[in-house]
Image (tube, helix red, strand yellow):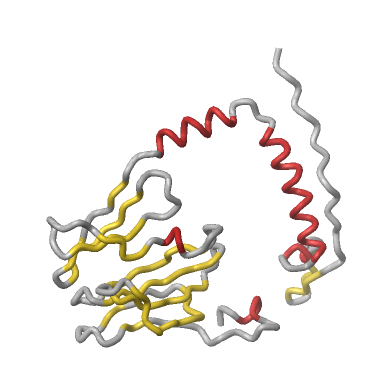
Length: 207
C-alpha cells in the first residue's frame, strides 16, 4: 500500500492593491511587492517557502541513493579540446567533481601542464564563476571575466601568462560582452554600460 503524501501547508501570500494602467486598460498586479528581492517581506516569504520545500525533499527515502549514484557517475576526469595561441597550448580539465573546470597552460606538448586559472579559488563559497576567457594572439596575456552569484554583470581582469599573476587592469559594469585582442597584443575591445545609479540600478542598469 502506498504511503499517503504528507500534507503541505503553504504560507499565505499577501495580495497587494497595485494596478497598472496600460492606455486606459487596468491590469491588477497583486504580487508586485515580490519583485523587490531586498525587502524584508520578500526575504521572509522566500525563507518560508524554502522551509516547506527542503523539509519535503529531505524526507524522500531514495534521495541519498540517487545522490550517491549520480556522484559516482559524474566522478571522472573531463578534458576540453586543447587550443594554441602563440607558442602555447591551453585546455580545461575537471578532476571529476570540481564545480568549475581549471584552465591549464603548457609551452610544449611534452611539458608538465601548469595551472593558469582555477575558478574554484575565486571565492570560498563558490559563488564566483569564470564567465569568459580571451588569450592574446602571442599567448602572453589573458583577459578573463568573472560573475558573482549568477549575475549578468561581469568584471574583467588581465593575467600575465608567464607569471600567472594579475595585472592592475580591472574593468567593471560589463555585461553580455567578450574581449577581442588587437593584433599587436597591447589591448582588447569590449563593451560595457555606464555605472548605474545606486538608487535606481534595478531600473536603469540595462539602458
